[in-house]
Image 1: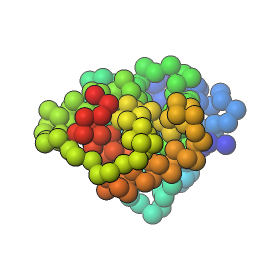
Image 2 (image 1 turned 180 degrees about the vertical axis):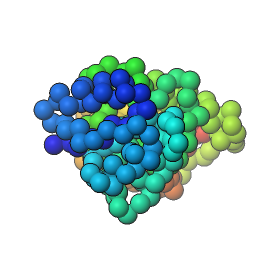
Image 3 (image 1 turned 120 degrees about the vertical axis):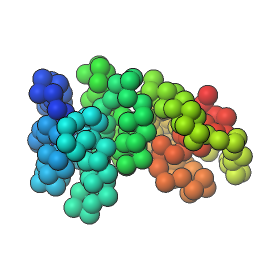
Image 4 (image 1 turned 30 degrees about the horizontal axis):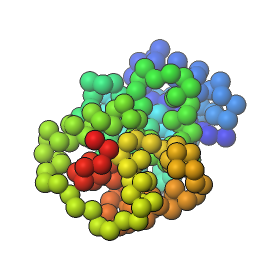
Length: 215
């Protein structure tokens, strides 16, 4: 059973997400929160597997709440999936830097939302392809993608996995595309993180972009 905390300052949006997720037999919504402070307190109280976190909320916003959740020993293992719109790319970047495991659009289809929660709960990062391109463009505009990057030697399979990561695919999707096991993909991603000295999957995407992959 995947235990989820839903945090959004709009009551109708919050209850809508809770209804969608709670209707799934493998998901339980353990709490709701109307701002970042409530989300942080609820995460500490309930230790959910995933926090579905709106970014822009009054008081403590979703970015600050994410930073506290991902860095606190009291919430070790809690994953954060942030909610965003196309107009909030800069906030997505900040949320990923704060330790979010991925992001999903607020107007996503119910099935895609459920899939996103399942992916993040399984330990994957989720970088939606339709937003990843915009995120990378935002980094480029901000000077994040400076000179072209020359990658260290990679195996052919590692190169294929890195390209798939750069395109925003999850480990499960990469396994399906490359016709290999999920555990094999996780091993390749782990090796890539080590070889490229990347702290997380989001940074892998940016490094791949600077190397000319996925774009």
